[in-house]
Image 1 (cartoon, helix red, strand yellow):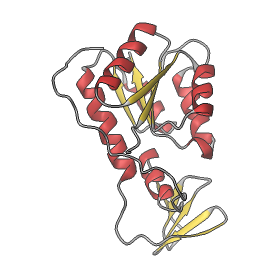
Image 2 (cartoon, helix red, strand yellow):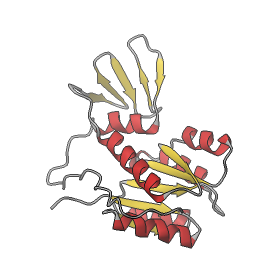
Image 3 (cartoon, one colour):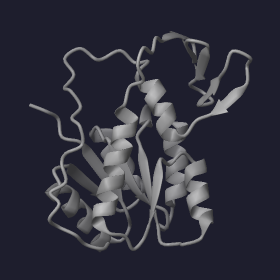
Length: 200
């Protein structure tokens, strides 16, 4: 039996959170909601989450702070799609700098959220061909490149640093981990029912 992707929606607005969770479940995903950072960490402790939809503007620890904390923990290497009600570039830029994989401005069409989720999952699971990796400490070597897993960037054969997006880092880091014996296969993103549209 194929494993269903599990998406965590973190938003202090109960109506929006439940609407997104409901839509994702109807679209073939498993979905959970969390109203704040404390609830988010509780879900992450007890479940394997494949992607987090994370609102920026929340009381207490906001989405930017939570995203930074996620990226500071190598054990929580989960794709993040950030939501923001602001139309200026500051939140978007800060979110990407904190390691978010994508962002979406509220209000949004639900099918666009679904399309972005599918795109993120597709990017993070694509495997580059003929990639050979050996690990030594925090550095992973392949070809003429070194992946620094602590600094989350690439080094070329001259020692120059090449910055990576969150998705690019996870792509390269993921293929360096051997498959776990007996682990269930991760399913591809489920098909869009294509019949339900809505603005969140």
